[in-house]
Image (cartoon, rainbow, N blue to C red; front, side):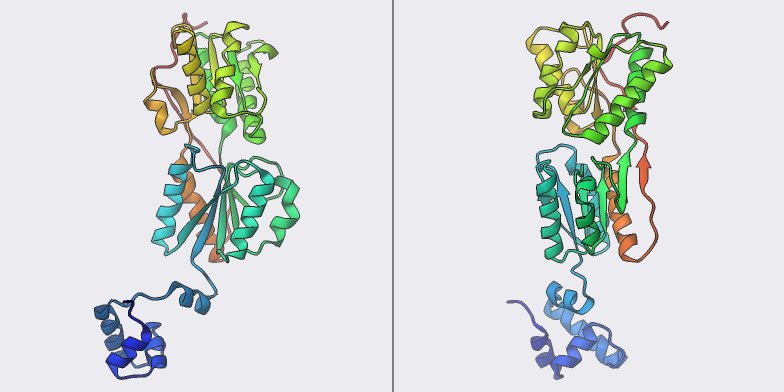
Length: 335
């Protein structure tokens, strides 16, 4: 059975109020009595009530985390980073899903607010300027990771999508590729636009004419299916390499290449974005741009703690790292 303050008071021969104050280190209770009661509580296995503590401090010591879906392979390392910092600071994390729907996302955020969480972290947020007024009314700190809509936000953490796509495209150019395709996702408008910009900037820097036929933006569908459809860049438009919006899209493309007996990377080089765990286990292992997902989660939670402690914070744009594996190959000497 759970040990209560009443049980401790009976064992110590003091009042309920004395025990409550001693456990909180109240100055009205002598040092000797406080030490005795705290030791007794530990011996009896007393566990403080989180509800009672939240009533006293007006904090629940809980953080709400909103993700697109728990099936998203981008999420685990971000969540691990958030939980690591949260637990060290004495906070718990509640996880909810938005399914990439901005209206549902806003509803989830409002639900977490009603649950009295102390702050909220949203990944791949699409609430954007559509819900600016609602966000302003929510009286808890909100940090957005890889925000997907333009608009005024309080705080955000993001990877440098332009830099990532530029590095990936430059890698393909260095391997001799000149017919480089890009497959994007319309379900992530902001990051897709930035990655497309990085791709185009690399081609322009290399004086490679941009062919609109090599930019493929399939109708909204699951990421894997979008990758399968992107094979048309190779079959119809002679792309020798394709930069994919993310690793799931790249794996979808890799899968359909194998089904059609198209050798990767000999006939087609493929490069992804994110460096999810599966990227290193597919065949061939996937060249990709690594997002620092664990660090993003840690920084987002640290930003929350700073905000809760009334410290000033700044939005952060993080660099990533190009990870070269077996899905890209040189096709002829550099020009």
